[in-house]
Each structure stands twice: as C-alpha cells, then as structure tokens.
Image (cartoon, rainbow, N blue to C red; front, side, top):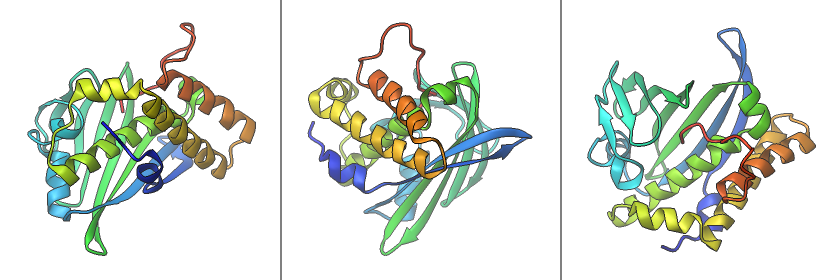
Length: 220
C-alpha cells in the first residue's frame, strides 16, 4: 500500500471555526477537496451501504432521512438531513458523546467537490486534543475514498491497519496533525496551546501515547 502523503494531504482545504450551538461553545472541523468523478457517483460512494465499506467501514441500518445507522466498531447515529445528490447530515455518536457531521457535494470544473463539516461542543476532550482528534481520522477516510474512486478496488482493512503503523503511515499522521495545528492557530487559538494539543493527538495516532492519556478520537 503506497500513498503519496504530501500530494493527498495537499489536496485538502482545512479550517476550524468557533461558534455557539444550542447556547454552548462549539467548534467545527471542515475538510474540502475535489474528486475526479461526477457528483452522482460521489454521492453514491458516500451514501450507499454497498459502497461505503469499500473505502471506509461496514455500515448497518437505514441510510435515509430519520434512519439510524451504525459503522462497525465506530460511530452510529441518526440521519438528520438528506437531499440527493448534494447534501446529507447526521448525528455522530461515539464513546458516549454526540457530535454532528454535515456533508455537501457540488460540481466544480468537471469534478466533484466534497465538503465535510464535523461539529462538537467544546469540552475537556477538545481542550486536550484539539481539531486533529477528528481531523486526522477524516484525512485518512477521504484518502481512502480517493484510492477507491480512482481504482475501483476496495480498501483491504488489514493492509490499511498495518500501513498506519508503518513509517509512511506515521508520517501521514504527523503531516495531517501539523495541517490541523495550523488551521487551529488560524482560527485564533494560542499557538502554544494548539501545538500541545496537536502533539498529543499525533502521538496517539502514531501509537506513541503513554497509557494514562485518554483516547483522542471521536469515531472518525
């Protein structure tokens, strides 16, 4: 499994925004990138129960408005919006916490743009790990999506897991985490605080975290 880490990470636009949700401080992590396919095909790839496992994880449930879904060994939730082929949203329930995802698709220059926003209420978890906790996971996911769309070959999950612990995989985590650190600073966070959070998250994804440090991921 070979990935041009600098290329795939460089194709993504990342941002972090802070706002209020339901009267509480919240933050949204946003990723956006183009894929060399049509909007209809991209929509099918990210919403079909048959195709999602080919690049992400096996999924069960009803992938329709109001339906409940569950990703194997990962997050579950409720589909809260669904307007084919351009928009869907859902709750993202993992580890006893609820966050929210919002996905938009649009045609652009003969390609299809995917924009994914993942919102969370700011709490201890965010203060400890920052945006990379979900950002690195989504960078991995949308990289897998590119490989699947380009080749039609399903991701082999055992190979992917082994790659994540390889030197190339660890380099991916480090570079992704650095991108998210920069996005965090760009939204107005103190640079030293952003680096501390990023360092913790990168270390965890690279398998280098001491056992007393909490898990940074929220299911992405």
